[in-house]
Image (cartoon, rainbow, N blue to C red; front, top):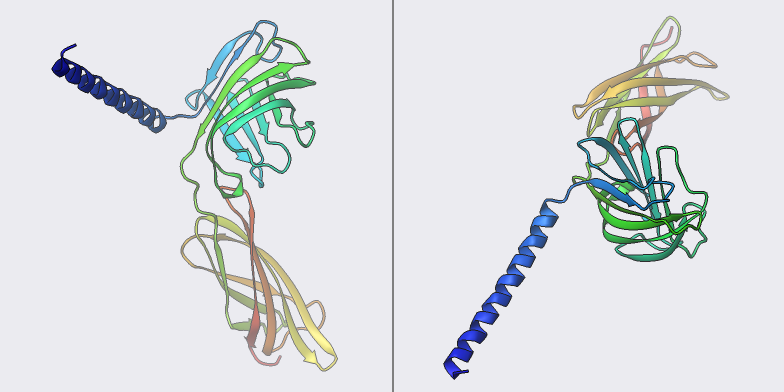
Length: 295
């Protein structure tokens, strides 16, 4: 080949290589950017779980829920199409985190031996008594409190030691996790005493980062004499929001009626995070003054 033509041929080949790399990179970016939640499986004839069928579920026709264990070792996914249900569990060997990689020799979750990966795919009332298989985690992004932000895996399951296999793929794509619930509790330094019956009224404010129902409980203690205490308890419910909300509780002493003067207020506020289902608890205590005078 003429030297000039050879250089032109090499240059054209190099440009083609660059173009191919660019297309592949763009294709990968588009695939990642357009990733969606789905569960699919293909069942071979004779497989008990899938009954030899192939199916795919998406949020358009099914409800999806997912949760990872606190140590990020196990993931559970439930898919609820109309009139049906499917559950998938994948677990890394004991002491490991479920991260991208190939997990060979999996046995039925949750009965796998500690050094063995766990796998279980069941649905429509059908499950394996024993199973073998393997799975590959392609992507795993976890957030606190069991939230699964992104997860992608393929799996192969054989029931009861049989040859027929079920091949599946799961992909979870969730938005970034919402912030956890925060709760702020304040106590009024001044309370009141009802002159007639000696009950005390105490209060303060509550404030939550998002709407929630808060349970407020507490104890009011007052020195009645050198050897006696006035003690009462309260338990109320209040609605909480990002705007500070006033709360108050009437407290009757279980011993000697309350009187005007100093008292100790111990208060606990508890709520359930609406997104993560976790309990949030805040405690406050302080010396307050009960106004009202002697009866």
